[in-house]
Length: 173
Image (tube, rainbow, N blue to C red):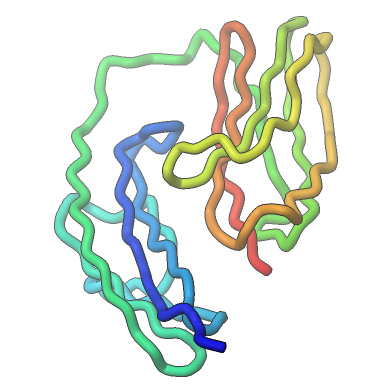
């Protein structure tokens, strides 16, 4: 039985769904889990939303010592002149975070509205629809099983007809 060799892809996004300063993410696959990450700036996480613009290289090492490397350029501009102070904060929260499978999601609606809640992978692909229904004003708490998703970073996006809120979810296995 042959194993899949270790590979890594590094991604950069400039606020595609909710991060003002953009973010970078390394996705390792193949090899033997667990993985360790080492970015050219010394960071050792798979995800970072605080890196400045530039070219970054990430080296991933698996538990057997195999390595794979990928580079990515982050080039995010500064957004100005947009104000959302008229919108009520929906207080979107996810816990525990990081999580293995089950997460609790809380949010508040100021008025009755159609609610659409979805989970996206870091490439922007929708991987799960959680809610799609009209809800009355109030605070909601739901428990969601994300067990079918692979370990990695995901974005939880909550939309109403007048607002949007996004937060990240880190799944570990």
